[in-house]
Length: 235
Ligand SMILES: [Fe+2]
Image 1 (cartoon, protein in one colour):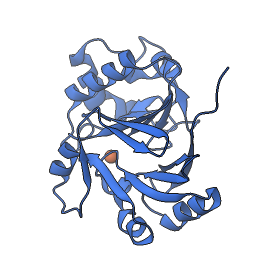
Image 2: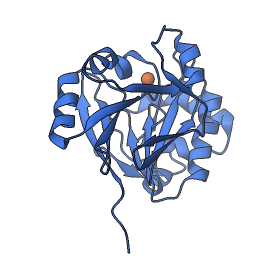
Image 3: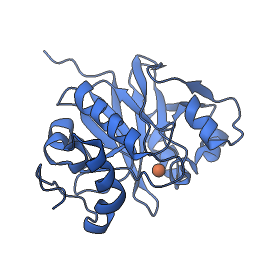
Image 4: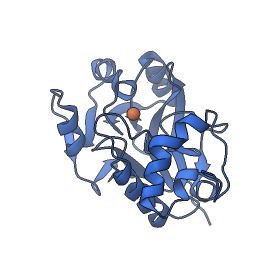
């Protein structure tokens, strides 16, 4: 028998870059965590109100402007604690008021819902994914049929290759991916579908991966990203 999970995840697509902001709601305690608050904070606060929850935590996948520009407004409306990886805080270099800094593998307790923070470098040095039950909130690490850029400051395609490998090997195939941007025709996908059709998960050679990520991909593919059969990434 499948018991209902102790949490639910709600997505809002906000801003000019099709960012996904997530609200993780713990049913028993009425607590909620906002992942990457940005763009239209009143809509995030309205969603929390509709769901009858109190925002107690802010989780950051990384520090890029399009994922963090609503933090101040959420903090003005709540007493939320902010969480990010220590590595990302150091990379960001911004003065933050009393954030909770984590290492990969730490678990944040949102009422009855444990949330595991994973260190997934590549897009930025301290990028994080959050595992909640059988869901994985992936920020700009893994998109549906895509992955985050590695050519911005702090980006590293070799580390992205390792990160994506670890995700592919570590998580069950039925894991549901919740990405940081709506760049495909569907907002979520299973890891099984991604292993099949996400070109970035098809490489077993780091040099070819780096070549594809840094020189080939952006010139040959556009959003919405669609599946690419294995072996058809590059000529
Ligand atoms: Fe980003």
